[in-house]
Image (tube, rainbow, N blue to C red):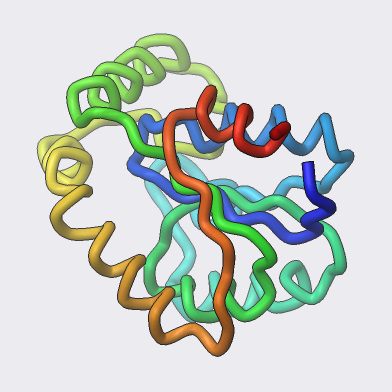
Length: 165
């Protein structure tokens, strides 16, 4: 694995961002920054986008990290410090299944990923529409970035294989 020091993990909810992030963090001994843990104060309350950007500033200034989470509004800020993007791609059905499974698994218990303890129609629709709405937005921000950033996309297994090659 090349010596990337600041890695951004993107993908649909349920794609496996947190799991992949944890595996790579252990292997490379990188500190993890979870946007969900920053964004969700509790099961019902979030911070504002501006508060999230402010909270991210000192974390992004660190020399080493792996960060998981989408939050398109903060992507330009994060891209300025990113060495590598890992873009997880899974089918919409698999993503939905994983999100529902995670909900049942952590129902009534703290979720280590920082996700809220609920699923609603709006969230399921966001997952279903993710390839049409969010992927083009990520591509747009990558084009506008001040420098070229390598992107590795695929499933978790495919990404780990590419990183080890």
